Image (cartoon, rainbow, N blue to C red; front, top):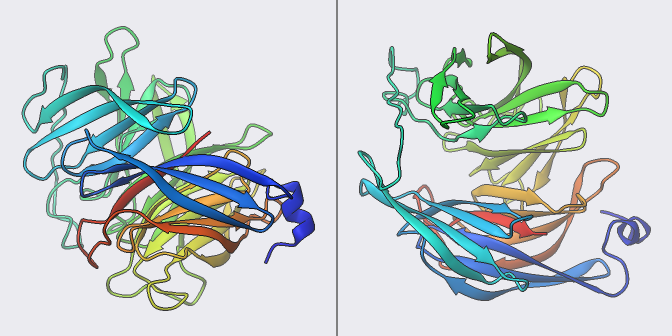
Length: 353
């Protein structure tokens, strides 16, 4: 529990403070949310809804400087839609452009990459490649693609003139890890690390980074469970999202119900500022079921957690000194609740700051 004196210093002081968030839902809706905090509590509500990102919006990214939101359709019909929205001052969205894409072509697609699998992995979901994310490195010259099916982090170099990609060496995770997401981290002294979240292994890995021969080279240094020492997840648990803030690392667990019925956990780690080594800190309540997505506000004083199956956005207080998550500040259901184990419900949430 955070003390009132601390809350006053991190943005939950006397007087009402307002901010907007945006959430996407697998049913097709993109929602604008309004959050107002007063003292140690707050209220959050849905203020508008729009469409335009296909049938199954799976992820959203906000470019706050340009006030642009990009949405990506996770359609399973073989044909989807990517959309660009203008973000108004009140968080409402207006469709600016859209692009129809399919497995074979798109009206403005210049290059496709076909991945192969040398051999089947130990997990049943590792019979084919499963690239789960495209992540730009801090230099803007490379992209990393965690491949859950192949237990690889694939690396590509970007041609600055044409935008075309050239494949670099891929880097193997542990067998059965199933890498899902990656995040770069840099300390104040300049130490760099890459952290990967392993969905199938319910773990996070730390990697040393070097730039050699016009490519990124990764060396895995250690891997730690998303559960406390001596504990493991259940048969249906799956790690979902990874974030860093300062010298702390966070990973969400789906379907572990660590904090009771439909109350999954967020794993918290410390990051050594000198070496980049991670160490277990504690598990925190996500106040949601199947937390597929979460994001910190700009000051790091609050975290918005999106429960996929519970289809809610929970606003949780964060102690900037200890990195620990605390009390529930506000909570709202967004769209229709999902079904356990199915691809429905809430898909992503971002702050509009």
